[in-house]
Image (cartoon, rainbow, N blue to C red; front, side, top):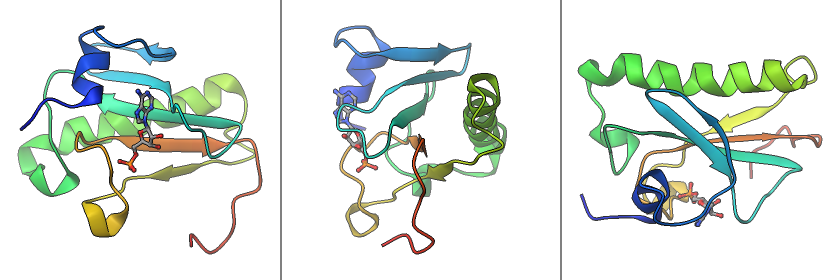
Length: 115
Ligand code: AMP
């Protein structure tokens, strides 16, 4: 897997507005937010280019990404109001940074249709 912007953020070689970190997950603000809250949750220690690269052995880590997002939403008080989690996969799915990440967006009414 080639080095991406997110690898550099995880290694602290590029600045980012980091809002959450634990042993497995790092979360930082999207540089081009599409909602008042727009965060990216990435696995810290095992890198995947896309969701397609994950297998059974990665189920726990994938779960941790989603649980980190919901924990953040609960902690910040917007979980009940609602939020959206998105994983874009490959070019056809709108992926531009090829390091697996979960978008967490909140703070505005999300359209019922995603596109
Ligand atoms: P995706 O299109 O799903 O691959 O999402 C990649 C996201 O990364 C986009 O929403 C970008 O705005 C965001 N992004 C790109 N570079 C940076 C950066 N240096 N710091 C934070 N977010 C970034």
